[in-house]
View 1 (spheres, rainbow, N blue to C red):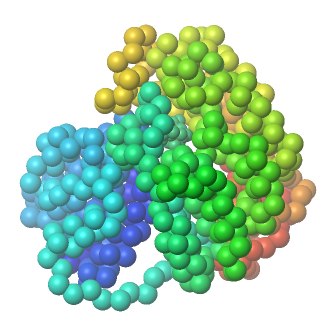
View 2: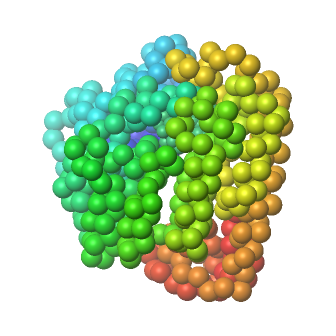
Length: 419
Ligand code: SAH
Ligand code: SF4
């Protein structure tokens, strides 16, 4: 068994963990291949947050099993949230082609050790790491919030903050190896350090990372609206590298639904938060996550979400139709919304948001912005502005990793175009 492939579905934490598995497999002397049929080992790292991701994974496992039956390989290892909550279905679909399941709530180190043992690796070789323009760094794992629809606390377990020295060391190494932008990760990143006894762990961490020489940009995901205080916002204003982008998942604009979701804030409190952001950071972009069709969401509740979207003028909304997750309180609530109705609300909200996004993006036309080039394909360069909007630059001679200025000449609802 010498060739491997990694398939990742889901969030940025999964991407980070897949990268670590990749480094481990390379150091075990394995080669990375592109096609399933060339791999002896396929590592599936998948998310369980929405039912759709789960179904995608199961169909992938079904296809791998067919290959296994035909060729005798590849075999697969499954990890991520999904391995914690859907073990039986995975085993049923995968039968003999699955050699192990590593639960998403086990530490990454433990899972890498298990993989090493499973593959009977004897020695390890040093590998040179790929230089990355931006890198994800988890600072807190798990979640204690238990929103009534969400499987994360079950799949990932309770909050566990990583030690500060370990995080800073990792970021220093990444920056020394060429990373210019760091994205700190956590399900409720505002809680960083609470379990370690820090009072202001999150903002102190941002302040420490901001000082790292050579680092150009700093981002973080995801903040929990109820835990964002004015004093944190004030302290953020003093940071030099923090990008002016706030991702503040609201989930619903109806107080009745927010309560039933157990989000711990009201519409009014959320509005107050974004008003503060707009005053303190006039150039910042604000994005959000929204669930439509939560149990009990009436037409009136849905319209309250729409009116909030109109008021907030989000740069972007990640809208999902509610899906039942096993063992969560919302899954057994009465008044589940019909799938057709959910879809209708989803499309309706997306079209409202797309119109707002278009307007927000077109605001940049004629302005000169700074982008960090992430990739170059042919004559097009791709990079982001601090507000986290993707810019496509035609005929650009810069290189990956360069920070350049470009004038925005056009925009659609997703991209800006620079010259
Ligand atoms: N910790 C983050 C997000 C975690 S999950 C937060 O609290 O905001 C990412 C997004 O998936 C959520 O913001 C939510 O919009 C969506 N999501 C989670 N559970 C869902 C469910 N059961 N159905 C539909 N969307 C869901
Ligand atoms: Fe899920 Fe809520 Fe935790 Fe976010 S804060 S991961 S939505 S339980």
